[in-house]
Image (cartoon, rainbow, N blue to C red; front, side, top):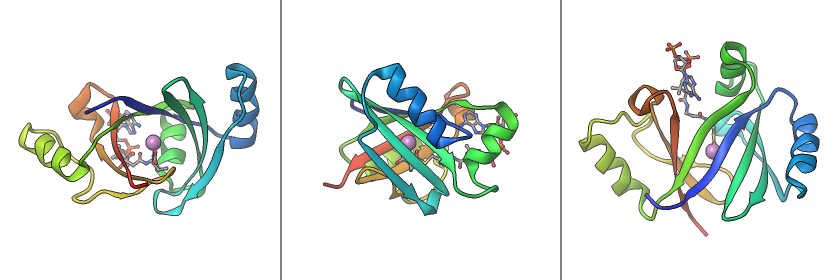
Amino acid sequence: MKDLDHIGIAVADLEQAIDTYERLLDTECYKRETVEQQQVETAFFQTGGSKVELLGATHSESVIARYIARKGEGMHHVAFEVDDIHAELKRLKAEGFTPLSEEPSRGADNKLVAFVHPRDSHGVLVELCQSID
Ligand SMILES: CC[C@@H](C(=O)O)C(=O)SCCNC(=O)CCNC(=O)[C@H](O)C(C)(C)COP(=O)(O)OP(=O)(O)OC[C@H]1O[C@@H](n2cnc3c(N)ncnc32)[C@H](O)[C@@H]1OP(=O)(O)O
Ligand SMILES: [Co+2]
Protein backbone atom coordinates (compact mmCIF):
# COMPACT_ATOMS: atom_id res chain seq x y z
CA MET A 1 0.00 0.00 0.00
CA LYS A 2 1.14 3.52 -0.68
CA ASP A 3 0.11 6.89 0.71
CA LEU A 4 -2.91 7.62 2.85
CA ASP A 5 -5.35 8.84 0.17
CA HIS A 6 -8.16 10.11 2.39
CA ILE A 7 -10.01 9.77 5.62
CA GLY A 8 -13.79 9.34 5.36
CA ILE A 9 -16.01 11.17 7.84
CA ALA A 10 -19.69 10.27 8.22
CA VAL A 11 -21.88 13.36 8.55
CA ALA A 12 -25.59 13.86 9.11
CA ASP A 13 -25.94 17.14 7.18
CA LEU A 14 -23.50 17.46 4.29
CA GLU A 15 -24.11 21.19 3.64
CA GLN A 16 -23.50 22.05 7.27
CA ALA A 17 -20.39 19.82 7.40
CA ILE A 18 -18.95 21.41 4.23
CA ASP A 19 -19.30 24.83 5.83
CA THR A 20 -17.61 23.57 9.03
CA TYR A 21 -14.68 21.95 7.19
CA GLU A 22 -14.19 24.95 4.88
CA ARG A 23 -13.75 27.09 7.98
CA LEU A 24 -11.70 24.46 9.84
CA LEU A 25 -9.25 23.73 7.01
CA ASP A 26 -9.35 27.24 5.51
CA THR A 27 -9.81 25.73 2.06
CA GLU A 28 -12.77 25.18 -0.24
CA CYS A 29 -14.37 21.86 -1.03
CA TYR A 30 -12.91 21.05 -4.49
CA LYS A 31 -15.29 18.32 -5.56
CA ARG A 32 -18.75 16.96 -4.79
CA GLU A 33 -19.95 13.67 -6.17
CA THR A 34 -22.79 11.24 -5.54
CA VAL A 35 -21.90 7.55 -5.72
CA GLU A 36 -25.26 5.81 -5.90
CA GLN A 37 -23.78 2.32 -5.70
CA GLN A 38 -22.55 3.22 -2.19
CA GLN A 39 -25.64 5.37 -1.44
CA VAL A 40 -23.46 8.33 -0.47
CA GLU A 41 -22.89 11.93 -1.43
CA THR A 42 -19.28 12.99 -1.01
CA ALA A 43 -17.41 16.28 -0.62
CA PHE A 44 -13.62 16.43 -0.87
CA PHE A 45 -10.99 18.73 0.65
CA GLN A 46 -7.29 18.63 -0.19
CA THR A 47 -5.08 18.64 2.91
CA GLY A 48 -1.43 18.51 1.91
CA GLY A 49 -0.83 15.20 0.13
CA SER A 50 -4.06 13.57 1.29
CA LYS A 51 -7.75 14.38 1.44
CA VAL A 52 -10.74 14.59 3.73
CA GLU A 53 -13.89 12.94 2.31
CA LEU A 54 -17.17 13.97 3.92
CA LEU A 55 -19.88 11.34 3.45
CA GLY A 56 -23.61 11.99 3.67
CA ALA A 57 -26.22 9.24 3.22
CA THR A 58 -28.51 9.38 0.18
CA HIS A 59 -30.82 6.67 1.57
CA SER A 60 -31.98 5.72 5.05
CA GLU A 61 -30.51 2.20 4.56
CA SER A 62 -27.11 3.53 3.44
CA VAL A 63 -24.11 2.24 5.44
CA ILE A 64 -23.50 5.88 6.41
CA ALA A 65 -27.01 6.27 7.81
CA ARG A 66 -26.61 2.99 9.71
CA TYR A 67 -23.19 4.04 11.02
CA ILE A 68 -24.52 7.38 12.30
CA ALA A 69 -27.54 5.69 13.89
CA ARG A 70 -25.20 3.29 15.71
CA LYS A 71 -22.15 5.40 16.57
CA GLY A 72 -22.98 9.02 15.71
CA GLU A 73 -21.08 11.21 13.26
CA GLY A 74 -17.32 10.85 12.96
CA MET A 75 -14.38 8.97 11.45
CA HIS A 76 -15.77 6.25 9.18
CA HIS A 77 -12.77 4.85 7.27
CA VAL A 78 -9.17 5.34 6.21
CA ALA A 79 -8.28 4.91 2.54
CA PHE A 80 -4.89 3.87 1.19
CA GLU A 81 -3.78 4.33 -2.39
CA VAL A 82 -2.69 1.16 -4.21
CA ASP A 83 -1.21 0.55 -7.66
CA ASP A 84 -3.07 -2.70 -8.37
CA ILE A 85 -6.27 -3.14 -6.37
CA HIS A 86 -6.92 -6.69 -7.62
CA ALA A 87 -3.43 -7.83 -6.59
CA GLU A 88 -3.77 -6.08 -3.22
CA LEU A 89 -7.15 -7.74 -2.54
CA LYS A 90 -5.61 -11.11 -3.37
CA ARG A 91 -2.65 -10.43 -1.07
CA LEU A 92 -4.92 -9.34 1.81
CA LYS A 93 -7.15 -12.39 1.38
CA ALA A 94 -4.08 -14.66 1.55
CA GLU A 95 -3.09 -12.81 4.76
CA GLY A 96 -6.47 -13.71 6.30
CA PHE A 97 -8.26 -10.37 5.91
CA THR A 98 -11.90 -10.27 4.78
CA PRO A 99 -12.61 -8.16 1.70
CA LEU A 100 -16.18 -6.84 1.76
CA SER A 101 -16.62 -7.60 -1.94
CA GLU A 102 -15.07 -9.99 -4.43
CA GLU A 103 -14.50 -7.20 -6.94
CA PRO A 104 -13.65 -3.50 -6.58
CA SER A 105 -16.33 -0.99 -7.54
CA ARG A 106 -16.38 2.52 -8.90
CA GLY A 107 -15.77 5.06 -6.11
CA ALA A 108 -15.63 8.84 -6.09
CA ASP A 109 -12.87 11.03 -7.52
CA ASN A 110 -12.04 8.66 -10.43
CA LYS A 111 -11.10 5.71 -8.26
CA LEU A 112 -11.75 2.00 -8.04
CA VAL A 113 -12.43 1.12 -4.40
CA ALA A 114 -12.66 -1.95 -2.16
CA PHE A 115 -13.00 -2.40 1.60
CA VAL A 116 -11.63 -4.71 4.30
CA HIS A 117 -13.84 -5.59 7.28
CA PRO A 118 -13.12 -3.43 10.37
CA ARG A 119 -13.04 -6.49 12.67
CA ASP A 120 -9.79 -7.54 10.90
CA SER A 121 -8.08 -4.19 11.45
CA HIS A 122 -8.73 -3.42 15.11
CA GLY A 123 -12.04 -1.66 14.53
CA VAL A 124 -11.00 0.50 11.58
CA LEU A 125 -12.73 0.15 8.21
CA VAL A 126 -9.96 0.20 5.57
CA GLU A 127 -10.55 1.27 1.96
CA LEU A 128 -8.16 0.52 -0.90
CA CYS A 129 -8.32 2.89 -3.84
CA GLN A 130 -6.71 2.86 -7.24
CA SER A 131 -6.72 5.82 -9.59
CA ILE A 132 -8.39 5.17 -12.92
CA ASP A 133 -7.36 8.44 -14.57
C1 LIG B 1 -17.78 7.25 -2.17
C2 LIG B 1 -17.19 5.94 -2.48
C3 LIG B 1 -16.01 5.54 -1.62
C4 LIG B 1 -14.83 6.45 -1.93
O1 LIG B 1 -14.66 6.72 -3.15
O2 LIG B 1 -14.08 6.88 -1.06
C5 LIG B 1 -16.36 5.51 -0.15
O3 LIG B 1 -15.70 5.94 0.72
S1 LIG B 1 -17.87 4.69 0.18
C6 LIG B 1 -17.98 4.66 1.95
C7 LIG B 1 -19.22 3.95 2.33
N1 LIG B 1 -19.18 2.57 1.93
C8 LIG B 1 -18.72 1.58 2.73
O4 LIG B 1 -18.34 1.79 3.89
C9 LIG B 1 -18.71 0.21 2.11
C10 LIG B 1 -18.07 -0.82 3.02
N2 LIG B 1 -18.75 -0.92 4.30
C11 LIG B 1 -19.60 -1.94 4.59
O5 LIG B 1 -19.82 -2.84 3.80
C12 LIG B 1 -20.31 -1.87 5.91
O6 LIG B 1 -20.29 -0.56 6.41
C13 LIG B 1 -19.69 -2.83 7.00
C14 LIG B 1 -18.31 -2.38 7.42
C15 LIG B 1 -19.69 -4.29 6.48
C16 LIG B 1 -20.60 -2.75 8.21
O7 LIG B 1 -21.89 -2.94 7.76
P1 LIG B 1 -23.01 -3.65 8.64
O8 LIG B 1 -22.52 -4.99 9.07
O9 LIG B 1 -24.32 -3.60 7.96
O10 LIG B 1 -23.05 -2.62 9.84
P2 LIG B 1 -23.64 -2.79 11.23
O11 LIG B 1 -24.23 -1.46 11.55
O12 LIG B 1 -24.52 -4.00 11.32
O13 LIG B 1 -22.34 -3.02 12.13
C17 LIG B 1 -21.69 -4.28 12.24
C18 LIG B 1 -20.43 -4.09 13.07
O14 LIG B 1 -19.47 -3.33 12.29
C19 LIG B 1 -19.13 -2.13 12.99
N3 LIG B 1 -18.92 -1.06 11.99
C20 LIG B 1 -19.79 -0.69 11.04
N4 LIG B 1 -19.26 0.29 10.30
C21 LIG B 1 -18.02 0.52 10.81
C22 LIG B 1 -16.98 1.44 10.47
N5 LIG B 1 -17.12 2.29 9.44
N6 LIG B 1 -15.84 1.41 11.20
C23 LIG B 1 -15.68 0.56 12.24
N7 LIG B 1 -16.64 -0.35 12.61
C24 LIG B 1 -17.80 -0.34 11.90
C25 LIG B 1 -20.33 -1.85 13.88
O15 LIG B 1 -19.99 -1.02 14.93
C26 LIG B 1 -20.66 -3.26 14.33
O16 LIG B 1 -19.76 -3.70 15.29
P3 LIG B 1 -20.25 -4.45 16.60
O17 LIG B 1 -21.06 -3.43 17.33
O18 LIG B 1 -18.99 -4.85 17.29
O19 LIG B 1 -21.07 -5.61 16.11
CO1 LIG C 1 -13.67 6.73 0.95
